[in-house]
Length: 223
Image 1 (cartoon, rainbow, N blue to C red):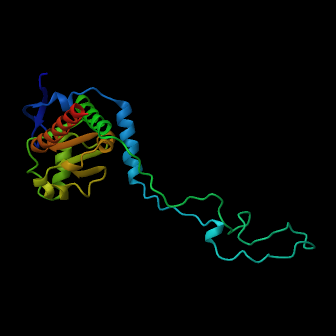
Image 2 (tube, rainbow, N blue to C red; image 1 turned 45 degrees about the horizontal axis):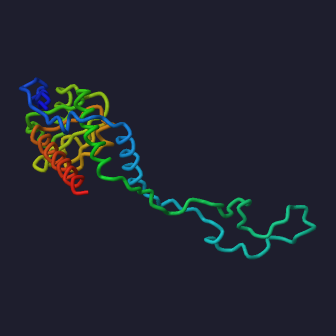
Image 3 (cartoon, helix red, strand yellow; image 1 turned 90 degrees about the horizontal axis):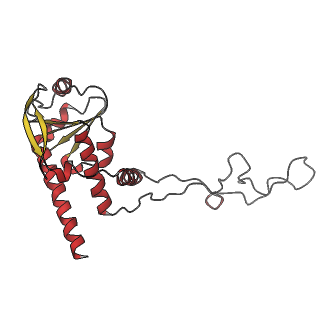
């Protein structure tokens, strides 16, 4: 399968040359089912699950009858913490729990390659020759995004291990999310209008994904 040709741009937004992308990673079959399952799985893992309501067993008091059974003209009551009373207990209220579910590696890998393929097909990926123009100042990051035409919609900046300082140029810009290359995930790829990264970072991600795909094929052969 031939490599996919994609434009490489400079900090001014002009096309410098073309680069080849792996068709296994950026030209794989798309699976909406896998993408949806992975996004649901990711968002479930982010939920704290610390919600808690006071049920009757967790409340103090309520052992004494509030008033006599008859003669008051009021409805009979046996406890001041009854769920029927204001300030009373909650019936079947939320308790602390984990929302995390399991999702096998094959589905997650399929979802990642599907998302990366969609990013390339939709021309939402912006590959720069380098990010040396951003030294940590916000105006540099804003100027770069303007040159790239990525000023409308959410922007995902993906940085390699040697580009950590570049994050300072984008952290105060609204609508921009910065993650490391090791943190590339389906949810951020799907929700972002533009994905910006350097050629070195792109090749690093491509290599990691291909390595995972190779490992998956090897595991399947051993089953």
